[in-house]
Amino acid sequence: MEVIKVKDLYKIYRESEIEVKAVNGINLSFEKGEFTAIVGPSGCGKTTFLNLLGGLDTPTSGAVFIDGTDISTLSSKQMIDFRMNNIGFVFQAYNLIPVLTAKENAEFIMHMQNIPKKERDLRIAELFKAIGIEGKENMRPNKLSGGQQQRVAVARALASKPKFILADEPTANLDSKATGELLDIMHQLNKNENVTFIFATHDKRVIQRAERIVTLEDGKVISDNNV
Image (cartoon, rainbow, N blue to C red; front, side, top):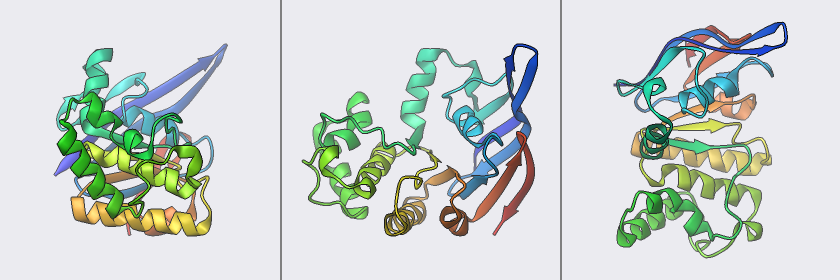
């Protein structure tokens, strides 16, 4: 089942007389349950493309359809609501709120969705057990290791059961052991919950786990392979 369809997508930046096509006419689709890596050299457009998929940036032209909705037609408020209910994000920087506990960080979006406390508690308990940080619920981010903080970020991304997860260099700040453990968790969640994961990465460890590899160069797709 097609979750995302990208049609003739462009993102062009202009600096004085210079025009930079960060995303240069991409046409792609992503199916439910994919575990895909978007790869390529620095400056190839990976992060810009991911931001366009997630509605964090607006295209110069073209369209991103999520379950048939052209997100470029949504107002700012509609986009915020749509993103909150459909898309999960995991970033290189964990982006946890320092004054909140691990549990409060993970359930933050569910709280904004007015999901009842009992349901939030059950979901977070289920996720923390699945990702191996059971018992860390009441700890604040500064008391957690980098790997544990990124696990909380993954729990936050998954908590509201989004249609897909966008992960931008999620392993960049982790050592090999933490990276391996995090990728194991993500792959298991991908299989168990059929969550679509799309990574922007240059990490070979992520690329080795991917089931589809889309390579960008100068904002264009130069290869698209299932592995």
